[in-house]
Structures are given as C-alpha cells and as structure tokens.
Amino acid sequence: MNVELIQYTPDPEKVIAAAARLCYSPDPVPELMEKLDEEKVANLVQKLRAMGHLSTFEHISFQFSIDGVSRALSHQLVRHRIASYSQRSQRYVKEEGFDFVTPPTIRRNPQTQERFENIMATLQEEYQALLAMVPAEDARYILPNACTTSLMATFNARSLLNFFEHRTCMRAQWEIRILAEKMLELVREVAPNVFGQAGPTCVTQGVCHEGAMSCGRIKALKKEAERMTLIYDR
Ligand SMILES: Cc1cc2nc3c(=O)[nH]c(=O)nc-3n(C[C@H](O)[C@H](O)[C@H](O)COP(=O)(O)OP(=O)(O)OC[C@H]3O[C@@H](n4cnc5c(N)ncnc54)[C@H](O)[C@@H]3O)c2cc1C
Image 1 (cartoon, rainbow, N blue to C red):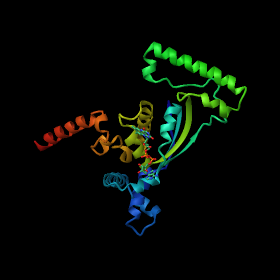
Image 2 (tube, rainbow, N blue to C red):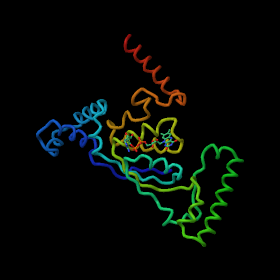
Image 3 (tube, rainbow, N blue to C red):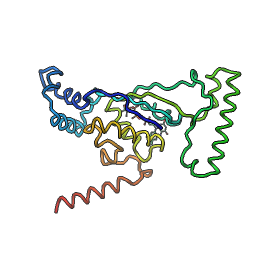
Image 4 (cartoon, helix red, strand yellow):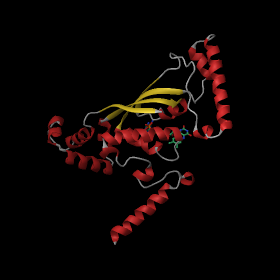
C-alpha cells in the first residue's frame, strides 16, 4: 500500500481560524488572516474542535493518492460519501497479470497461501482468455476483491475526522484501518491542532459504540484517566 498526501489547503489551520473569526467580526477574511498569529490559531482551532463547531473545518481539504490497495478496501472507502474520488477503471485499463493483496491470515499459513495464489493464477489466466473474446468491461466480472486499485481521494477536515473515527477503530477491517492510520499520520503533520486528538471514539469522545464487540481499549483508557486523576488530586 502506498499513500501520499499530494496536496492540501495552504495554511489550513489559519483558514479555519479566519472562518471562525469572520462570524464575529466586520473585517473581511484577508484582514483577519493577517491579524492571526500561530498561537491564536492553535488556541482557536483547539477550542472549535472541543466545542464541536466543525463547519469551519469544512473549508480545508486534503488530497491523497492511494495505490496498491485491494478492491475490497476501495469498496469500503467510497462508502464515505462526503469526499471525492477518482479510481482506476477496470473498463478502460486492462488488468492483465493483475496484482493482488494477500490478507495476513492467508499469508501466514503456507497451505492457505498456496491455495490463494493458485486461485489468483487461474483467474489471471481465465481473465486473459476472456479478454480475447469479450470487452474488458465484461471480462472484469471474474476479477477478485483482492485485485489492487489506485485512487485519488479528496476529503475536507470534518469528513476526515469522521472517517478516522470509524476506520482507525479496532473494529474496522484491517486493510482500511492501516490506510486510515497512514492518512492520519500524514495530516497530523500538517494540521496538528485539527488532527492531534483524532482517532476512534474511545479516544475522541471517551465512548465505545461497539457494545459486546468492543476491543476493550475503552476500559484501558478509562483506567488510565482514573490513574491520572488520582495523580493530579494528590
Ligand atoms: C466497523 C464497520 C463496519 C461496517 N459494516 C457495514 C456493513 O455491514 N454494511 C454496510 O452497508 N456498511 C457497513 N459499514 C459502513 C458504514 O455503515 C458507513 O457507510 C461508512 O462507515 C461511512 O460512514 P458515514 O456515513 O458516517 O460517512 P459519510 O458518508 O462520509 O457521511 C459523513 C456524515 O455525513 C452525514 N450524512 C451523510 N450522508 C447522509 C445522508 N444521506 N443523510 C443524513 N446524513 C448523512 C452523516 O452524519 C454521516 O456520518 C461499516 C463501517 C464500519 C466502520
């Protein structure tokens, strides 16, 4: 999997702060931006995040190149509707000798790995044969979820926070969780006050919505919070 942050709104946190200031000021945005220094921006962004005034976060966006992920992943990714996507087409780009993602549970056992690779080899062969008989858009019906794909995805910061809540959770499927963790790492570097506390709801809200399916991390986080409270109360 290869993930790159190829572009993002310049000075993203200042843009958020200026949008928030605009609501309470007669000055236009360029003037407000001039008056904002780094400390004011950081304080304001953290305050907006804590208060949940997240419409201002919609003004900044992040564009990712995502490569070498499975179609199983991309199907889950595009369920996040508040984002824009472009994906390599299997109608126009032939998948001759396609690459595929092998899940770790299959890879760690020689027997399952061999079975998996045999199936992929058969599919590659059959796909190639079909290509000689029917259009690529029809031959692709036999391609597997494991087949790799490439996407460009553009998210605004509010949507990204929602994406991270869902997909960095231990209940998320392993491949999209790895992608989400990589994306979070990239945006944290360029907008630390927006994404510093981003993550699953056990981290962002101190709650877990997974009920009996919970990974148990919330209990460990609560214990740690209690321990810290005891230390501070001493
Ligand atoms: C662990 C896990 C398991 C999952 N299992 C399944 C499954 O078995 N089957 C399945 O179909 N999906 C499943 N999903 C996908 C999930 O239901 C969501 O479709 C996906 O996570 C996108 O989330 P979202 O709607 O919040 O994101 P976005 O589509 O980006 O939407 C962001 C937010 O905008 C608002 N919004 C967007 N569109 C609308 C709308 N039409 N009406 C009102 N508000 C809107 C909502 O507040 C939403 O949270 C799973 C997701 C996870 C993380």
